Picture 1 (cartoon, rainbow over the protein chains, first blue to last red):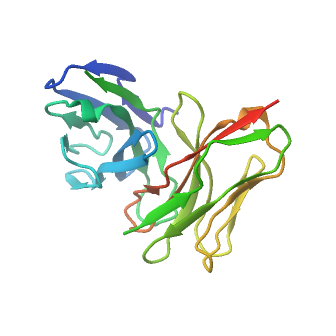
Picture 2 (cartoon, each protein chain N blue to C red):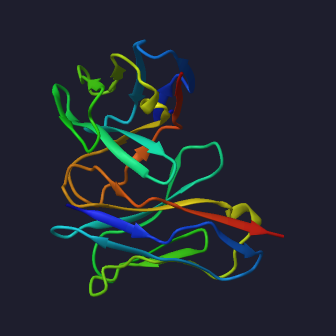
Picture 3 (cartoon, rainbow over the protein chains, first blue to last red):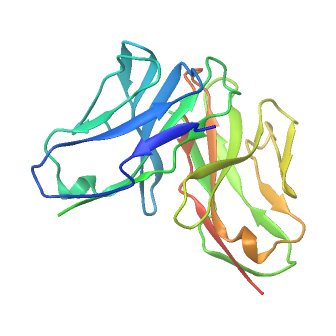
Length: 114
Length: 112
């Protein structure tokens, strides 16, 4: 089972460049989300989606765009990368409503902006 | 808003020692509580969860009990191994949208 798949795993960008972090899940999950992990900060929610065509902002959305055209895919776009976006990014998915649902994570994408 | 506070690390233990990592939370409504583990260079794996007060989650020798009266979800293991060395995150969901609020993580280092 593939689960939640993120690409690329590692990326180095120059300041001002744009890129897209890809996320795909094969579990037919309604909910998908993006987090960033920074030292001493834990994981913080960037954007999330409750279904195809529906997205919303999380705690730290500035500098990132998302879209959800299909149930399976939830790409995260950096329009103009900044050094402050150097981080580890995790995509996650969950089957549906309810606080007790297990949330599954991808293996992470390590991004460095120079 | 929701928040999770967990003890700062690193926590350094010898093999076979007893482990406690404290976690307390504030949340609206009735949250579900989780412990995730992150091994070096890897993603997050769910370790255990509890969805209502007095529930005990357990997995791989780790346990945590949902204590509503003290708003706590402390992680315990009776005898740690070197392979338990990792970062442990306490987290909660309360919105119904399956998004997590995380603590800052606690690094555990276990020496032989």
